[in-house]
Length: 308
Image (cartoon, rainbow, N blue to C red):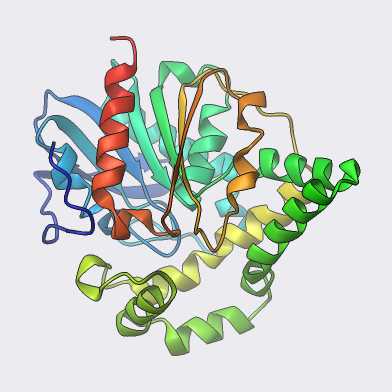
């Protein structure tokens, strides 16, 4: 596998497309690569769709069966109106429904980003998750229970390091307060939620050239719909963290220049997962756009390291 940092292939065309149903939720699923390949599921976050992975797919689909899907609320998948429909417990059932549909006889490897990673964390901490997931590569998306527990410990420690860690994460997460307000954030994204503005934002904040950013035509409605992820989960998990453990092998790709998630927030992950590998990368939040080759290389190495 060759590495060309920052080079993104043209928009990937799926070899197969179908729908997976989870109750009344219909999820658009896209497959790439050999049908008999080892299955690798890619899960996107806000405000993206499966197109987030357009730079990663061609680097993996030559040897793996790559599956990407639009999570509920995005792209071509169902977008139920109630905020409660976006609770992590429900998002996890969507993930399991996709896995059962695309790989009923063997566990899949998973690579997830942002809210995609948050919801996969929810899934891999469920009892029996190792029957569905062989490995989990997490990018810029913590387990919210783990993050809340880490922040609380930082405050209780009374140490400058602990207090600063919590404060810096609060500052990085300040935007979520705006996202959870009624009415205003929806109006804001109706005005500025265009492909041009979003690409300009990513260029200014992370230096990502526009040609490396692949967006769905539904970008504006996805920005607005995805706000329900924040409203349904942030306060519940910050004020009521649970003890959540996983036996699934976890790989953390920690972006040290991430504007949303501070690297220290992952320092306690080994308390909650039996096997953890961590790589700190000098990148920003949107690693799938800025350096898809890094994701492909680390994911490939981690998958190959797992027992057959």
